[in-house]
Length: 222
Ligand SMILES: O=C(O)c1ccccc1N[C@@H]1O[C@H](COP(=O)(O)O)[C@@H](O)[C@H]1O
Image 1 (cartoon, rainbow, N blue to C red):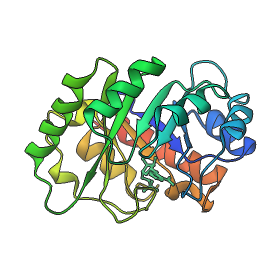
Image 2: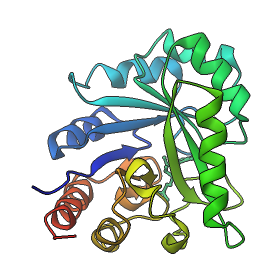
Image 3: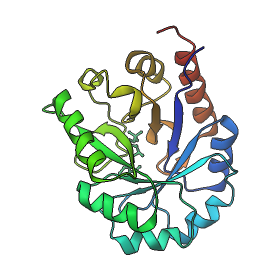
């Protein structure tokens, strides 16, 4: 039996993109609450988009260095399943927010040329020991802006033991995701710019092709 890599499509801003993401078979969709992102949605808009999400599809709220009040404002309007911290949040800050709002969280690890595989295991351990609400690392590329860059990092830096519990992101697309999944075997993949027609505007055909490409890798023997 082959493993089914989980798939998150991030940065949705329109109902039609939510519907296309769900119809294509994604496990999760991401809403961005970082005001400087071209994919930013207000808490109210997030609530509207969430109405198009059926049961068993997770809604991930992406935050960059939020205050507890900002997260609470979103949760007052939109039923987020999981929080994604994608800034400079310490283990203690993530733990405090997650505990206060009673939500599991993922933490982005931004990987650059000087990152060592052991750094990632240490980083994961720091968040794991800080909170029972920590569910895993999301591996992204270190760039000047916080994320959504469409840039790939060196996947060989991912420790073999970390991959099955990590979310792989950063510059994924239909062109490289089969190789990424077959080579890294992550728990999940996450994509934003690679399935866009323009920033914040998703393309249904690209979402579908991306998911097919992941399933192709899932069917490839390890
Ligand atoms: O999407 C954004 O605008 C964004 C803003 C701030 C932090 C993270 C952001 N997106 C996340 O970045 C990674 C990689 O995205 P891409 O596929 O390379 O475009 C992904 O996890 C998004 O959720």
